[in-house]
Each structure stands twice: as C-alpha cells, then as structure tokens.
Length: 623
Image (cartoon, rainbow, N blue to C red; front, side, top):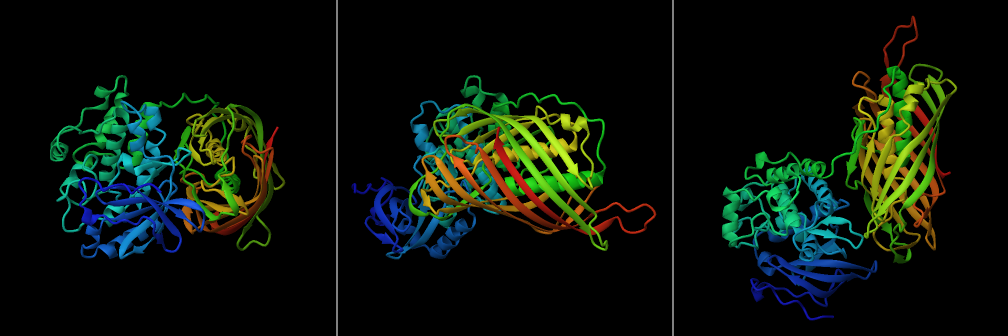
C-alpha cells in the first residue's frame, strides 16, 4: 500500500478524514487514498463479497458539521440509486464510519476525459469527441427528465471504463454536498466548478437543465481546443466574464471547423439560458449533423398501391410487434426515410456473478465480410372479436429477410462498425389471409442499407438505416424493425467478470408503433469453451393500457394489455459475431379495442374488443 495522498493545498488539515485500512459495512476494504480535493477524499477499495474493485468517496468533516447535512446527504445518494442508467456511474452502497458518511461507487479503469486531455496537446478531433459527447448529452436528458440537475458537469466527471465506454460521474453529489446557506463563498468548493458552471449558477439562482447544457458545452469546447471557453485571469475574473461575454467561437480557434457546429456550441454557451437548446440531445444532434453529414438516401421506387387500414393494422401491428418482442422494441414511430438512433438505451444488471467469476466477455473480431444472413419469422395469429363465436381471422405469416453484412472497422477499444443491406424479402400469408404487399412494395425493400456501431460487449451505441422519403408505410415500419434487429443481432454481456451460472438482465423501455413497451432479456451462462459462450435466454415484454395509432392517424386502437414471453438457447461466438444459427420461440397475448370491418348489411359498431394470440418463431441463420 502506497503512502496516502497529501491533502490539497487549499484544504485545511482539520477537514481531512483518513479511511485508509478501514473495512466499511463489513464488505468494502479501503486500500489507499487516490485524491484529496475541495469537497472530499477519494479512495480505492475492494469488494470482498463479489471480488471486484470499487471507489469510495468521503466528504470533508466541515460538511458534516452543517445543519441538516446528514439527512440531505442520505436523501440525495438514495436518489442516485433509484435513478440507475447505463451511462451513470453506479452507487453501490452508502453508510457511515466514525460518524462520517461515505458512499461506494462502481470502479472504472479507463480514467477521465480530463486525464485524456492531459495526454492530448491542443485537444481532440471532432470525430473523437463524437464517441462520448452524444452519449453524455443523452444521459443528461435522462437526468433532467426526472427533475434533477447534475450541477457539476466537467471533464473530471466524464469517465471511461477499460473498454472505452463513457459514464457520467458524481451525478447529484454536488447537490448532496451543497451548503444551503452559502453558495459560492468559498470558490472552488461550492456547488459546481467555476470553469464550467453556467452564468446563472454563479449568482446562486434556481438551476434548470440549461445549466448542465452550458457545462457540457464548456467540456466539449475544452476537449476540442485544449482549453475551457474562459481560461485567462483569476477565478473571479473568469466568473465575471461569463456574465458579460461570449467565448471565442470554435471556428476561429480550429482551422476547418464546421461553422454550423461552432454556432451550436456558441448557442449552448449563451449567457441567457432561454437562448440555449431545448435539450442536450438537440444540442448534440446539431453538432453531430454538422460534423458528419448523412449519406445520400438510396433511391427506391414509389409504390402504386396502399393496403386498406384494416390489412395494414393487422400486418403492421402483429408482425412488427412480434419481431420487436424478440429483437427488442425500437424508436419513436416510423422513420421518414432515414432512422438514426444514438446512445445505448439498454440497462444491464448483473444478477449473479456465477462460479469463479474471472472473465469479462467481449467480442474480438477482425474487419471483413460476414456474408449473407437470413432472418426468418414465422407467426401464427388468431384474432377473436368479442360477441362473435368464431375467430375473426386465423393466419400463418412468414417472412424471410436476406441481409448482406460486413464488419467495416474495429476500434482499439473493441467497438465494432457493422454495415448491412437487404438483398431480398420473401413474404407469405396462408390461409384466411389479410392480403400480400404488392410487388412494388416488396421491391422497395431491396437495397435498404444501414450501419450499427456496437460496443465490445454487444451493446448498440448508435445506428442508421437509409431508405427513401415517401416510401410505402409498410416499408418504413420494417426499416425501423430492421434497424433494431441489427442493434440486437448479438447477445449483450455485462462489463463485470462472470463465470458459469452467471445471470444478468438487459432491460429497456421504448416506443414502437406509437406504443410504450417494457422489454427485459435475461441471460444465463451455461458454458464457456474457448471463445464460444452457450447461453439460456428468456424474454418478457409488457405494456400498460394506452391509446395508439398503429398505422395512421385515422386508425386508432386502444391497447388494454400486452404480455409476451419466450425462451431460447444460443451460442455466442466472440470471434465470429453472428451465430451460425439462432432460434427464438415466443408467445404473445394482446387485448385491445380496435377497428373491425362490419359485414355487409349488418349493423353494429366498427370498434370492438379483440383478443390476439400470437405464436412466433424467429431464426437467424448464416447462409
């Protein structure tokens, strides 16, 4: 064990607490002090129960003496535990030692953005910044949607694991350590960091999500230039400049920098919060679109026919819903030509580490063609309508997509850039059919292209599918489905070491066909032999009562309940990416009030309560 880190020069000795050598909560061994700053100390530790490294943070005793601090600290840390997110550093535990509170954090081995910038003279490229910036923007929007402001976004609180995944740290901790009586009386130890805090934060006024957007823009500015927007003069001078000046635009500091991206950063750094973007995601999208223009869309023929609303309702709702139940639900509504999704929406929770957890499972492949892959979907659908003795329709529906796939690039961190395009689509309905798409519609599927970027553990980081504006609605729906099929084409692994018997959940809440769904996949390791991992997989999907428009605004249905469940056994080849064969079997029960055709000459309502029973098999096969 190395000698403890001495306290920072501006931290009086009476405020320093040394936990070195202590065992916290009977589990966490405190090994050594890593840093001592204005708010507290940071220690490395070891979880003796799960056999993994952790980080322990302890506030200075000067906070402990403040009235109401302990209750506020416990309340804010408990809030962090309830608001888990895949890109927020997890808080594992909290407690007190020698009457001083502490909390235990997930350990990440990749350092911080601040560390990376210290190794990079003159800042990083905009492409390098796009690897972390949109993810942190989405994460902040997640925080804001739950009524909380981070308050201390800065390069030191943007962390990476040893695979290059980015995380937001110290979420809410600034609020937990806030002195409600004095805000910035001690600059550098109050709420936020002066170099990144928004102008309205300086005066101690009420903070909104726009303050975090300002801090994120400041961190991006520093990442691109090597310097914060205001870095000359004393702390007081910097704070005063923020209240009255705009920083030098990036276009004037970086040769060839896209002007639209520079304007976006300037807008996010506006003195008036009302002039900034409506969300951090809107800010990130504007910068990304300026930095990486979208490719030209693939030209596809325009259809001459459109199916009736009833036919479309059944095909789109059941076929789309069935595929999503197995391959995970997707984005908000049908894309208008292109569909782009950024940021990993899945939350991975390790339930059991398994026997002798030693191995972190991750894909390690080489760039090159994968070849043709068939995605087959077979569905038996029975639709019953309340008040009618016989099922309204019974159909067997089959689809076979043939995709050509290529691994374009593998980054040093193991991120996989995958591209694909549709070669053919075969479609059949028997008997009691609802009708087939016209040949023109089927032809539109050929040539639909897409890309997806996967982390080394299989989590989709972003994706894009390209088609034609004005394409048939059924094609647009299936483009959305294909995009999310590619985002979930491989099993997802946790970032912690696992062994035989390990279990973890991958959960998401998404919108598909204007319907809000909750989807959970549970994996269990059966065996690990060389690079092949055998897995038992179970899936579950539910949806609450809601009204939605599954096809168009003039066809509205009310979902009363949805329950889906399925099982699979699969093999993940960590050096081949796509399994040779993968089969899911699933069943789904839906109850809804939906439009129904009224037989000729029969009176009655055109809306009735319906029950839909679906049996689904999805197979992915290498050709």
